[in-house]
Length: 332
Image (cartoon, rainbow, N blue to C red; front, side, top):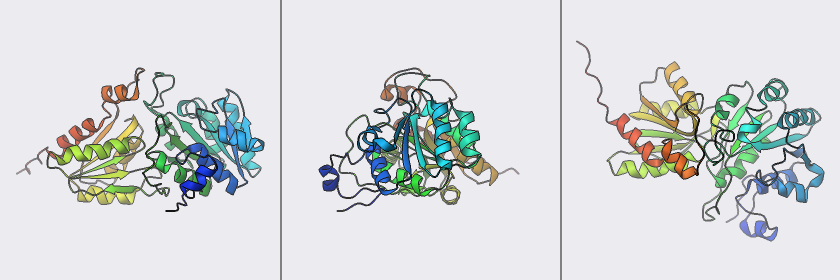
C-alpha cells in the first residue's frame, strides 16, 4: 500500500534509495527535495540529530555552525528573511533554554519562517540535568507566534516535518531519538497542527498524552480495563495551539481528564490543559502525570520513568484515583 505522508512513498521505493522509513533524516531530506527553500543548520550534532543525510546528499544546503546555537538561530533568522526555510537542529535543552533570547527576538517576535528542531526531550537521556529538557515546552509555548509540535513516535515524524513545512511561521519540533528499530508494521500517521487525535474511545477518563507518553497512555488504558474503567486516549501532538474544541468535548463527556507528558508539570501540557479547564469552568476532575517540579538524576529512560512516575502504571493509578473519588454531598 502506497503512503504519501510527509513526502514518503511506498517502502520499496525508500529501500531502493537506502532510506530508513521512520527516520527524521529521511523525512527532512525528502521534504528538501520537494521544496528548494529548505536548508539544514546544525550545531555540531549531525549524527545525533539525524541530519547526516542532508550533509551527504545535499551538501550545498547543509550548514554546520559549530557548538554555538545562539549564532545558529541568528543565521537561521537571516536566511529566512532572504526566502529560505531553515531547519535548525540541536538537543532540546540547547536549542531552547540556551538561546531563548535569540529565539524570542529573531524568530518569534518578527515571525520568521524558522523551524527549530530539538532532540532528546525530557528524561530520554542518561546525561542528567545538563541535557534533560524538562522545561522546553513551557518556554516555547510562552512565546507569541510560536507553534509547538511533538509527534507521538517515529511513525508520525514524517507528517510532523510536512506540517512544519506547510505552516508559515516559527515551529518548534520536539523529537525523540529512535534508540531501537521502529516497528515496521506500523502505518505512517497523519498530523494536522492544532487537531488532536483520538486513538481509542472510552467513557470514564480521557488521557491526553504527547510524545513518548502516548504509548504509555495506551498501555495504561489496558490496565484500567482490568479495573472496570474505560479510557479515551488522545495524542495531543500539538502543544500550541491546543485543540480546545476536543478538550471541551472530552471534559463534558468524561468523569475525569488526565494529562501525561515527558516534561515538568509546571508550564507544559498539563498546565496548558488546566488553564483552559479553569478559565472555562469545565466541570471535570483533573490530574497531571509528569516530572513533579524537580531536577532529575541521570539514568536509563526506563529507570527514570519509573522513579519519576511517568510509566503506564502511574497513569493508571492516577486515573483510578480520579474516577473513584466520590462527589461531595450537596450542601443543605
